[in-house]
Image (tube, rainbow, N blue to C red):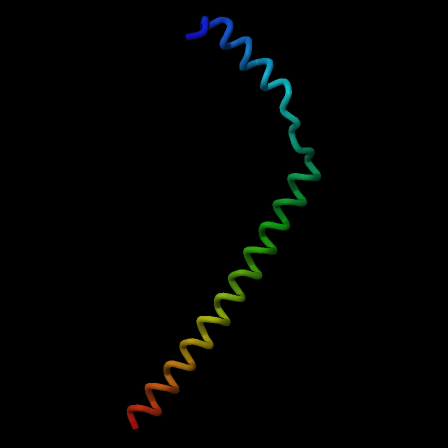
Length: 64
């Protein structure tokens, strides 16, 4: 078990090694996330629509 003062010192040293992203990097990655989320939602909407249409057609065909 480490001394609390030594632990805090080590934590501060490790925090000093962190490379924080720039404002531009944060904005770029945020925009990319929104674009990918939009593309994924469109894809799953189209897949859901295709499955729904196919099952409706199958049920209508079998039910007739």
